[in-house]
Amino acid sequence: MQKYLAQIEAISPSHLEKSKQLVRSFLQGPGPKLQQFLVERRHNTANWATEWWLEDMYLTVPLGLPINSNPGLASRPKNFSTQRDAAIYLARFLMELFDYQETLDRNDLDVDVVKCREGRGTQKLCMAQHHQILKIYRRPGEIRDEQIILDRTTSGDHIIIAHHNQFYSIPVRASDRGRITESELIQQIQKIMETPADPRTPPVGILTSAKRPVWARSRSELMKNEQNRHNIELLERCLCVVCIDEDILPVTFNEPYNKNDRWLNDRDYANVLHHCLHGGGSRHLGANRWYDKTVHVIIGKDGFWGMTYEHSAGEAPAIFNAFEMLTEKVDSMPLTVENLVPSHLPSPEKLDWYINETSRCNIREAMTTFDALVEDLDLCILWFKDYSKEFVKACKISPDAYVQLALQLTYFRLHGRLVATYESASIRRFSKGRVDVIRAASPESLAWVKAMCQDDPELQNYTPDDGIKREQKIMELFDLAVKRQTKEIADNIYGSGIDNHLMGLRFAAMEICDNLPELFTDESFGIVHHFALSTSQVTTRNDTIVGYGPVVPDGYGCAYNLRKDSIIFSCSAFHSDGRTSARKYAQALELSLREMAAMLKTKNK
Image (cartoon, rainbow, N blue to C red):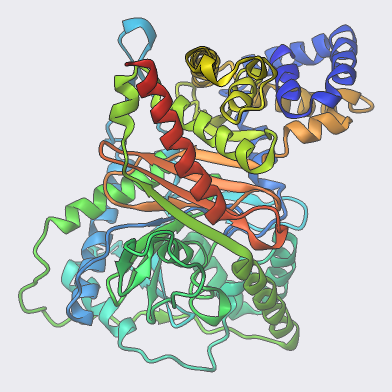
């Protein structure tokens, strides 16, 4: 409760006195009973929080998956001279993916370990996410989505390939002959690649971009037809979805932040991230997807290589790391094959749909809604090369705490206040643990950003001749903010974050109280959980661009990759808000990072 009040003090101080009264009432009233409920739940479940967390974070959220939930990753582009090269590369990646799946089936995957505090050795991490990413499908519901857990003895023996908005099923294993060969898979992929677009193909995949209740109703309409039921079952029970993208996304979404930041075929970094997140909407490749499926591999015949994933199944370390590990294996292979042995396999099964007038109307509405969301998304990539995490570590500061304070300074510089800030904190130290929330807005960070922006009352007493005293005061405030943020990080990864705990108390109240305590219905509780700054440190193995959209209409998204030679930031906002701008945030962030380095260098003189 004290940590909760500290959030209100930093974010909405006008609510602080009332919130203190609500906290006192909660502690003297239902709080202890709800806490005891959680203690008992902990004794009776593997993880008291995860099931409720899934409900709260994903399954009861009605927003469409692309942009709002599903992250994207654009990897280093490939050099394909011919369409055959693309087919070979994709087939080899899929063969590596099948090997990875079989490793998981045998429980042979190495367990991740991390160092413990104060030199207390290492600790194993829960590997549940790794084992479930190829088994989970998110089925839409009008009130609540459902996670379908596939039985590997009866599912996952086929993949789905999307091309020109048409879906194809390719069996990759058979009980009488084992796994498909690389040569056979290449030829199956080539058959699909050589199939021309058919303008009569209904863009059914666009329905999976709709708000979840809307997609649930559209799905029910499709399921009235037997052929459609067969298609949807194949899509739900496949190992993964592979999207073969024909044309190139035009460079129209954003001007590049840096004119030299080009990726492939004159596309800038923000453009390739747009490609991963939504494919350009219904006008381009946005219907060449099935967003409910966890793993979506995206390959362009021009060499584009990336993925998107359905987020409720797992976090980036489990999904992106597997993708990059398999990509590195394929990159090390020469892009040649011996003469292909003619395959006698039947052609891939084309999923034909029966579309009645109601479904046509649903598709048109989904296209309109999705295209509006796509046009609204504002992305900007900042590849900051002035210094890297090595400089920050040399200053004996946690690089993650440093970046989080830079993000706070940037928001304050643009908007004159702090807001609830979300940073995902892995809690895989606990069985079935997913994430808690590292919060960077605090009274300490607020005092420091005010000082940096020359808005701190104490600094007004100093004259220009007192520059050294002013700098010392700012450094003192910075040290306090760093200390507080470093503790916040440790508290979360070791299980003492406040967000899962508050969520658990609220869910407990819904189960055993006649009415929710006022603590959970007061305006201040909503303010503290309105994450206008949603951030995540995403560490990748190479030059990849990772990002996602904001989680609230007036917010920013900011994924960052701390590298040895640079820091990559993917900033997002929505044009429709009018007060937020991904480009302005990136520009202000660059200034913040330079000012912070100058501050530290002055200290070390």
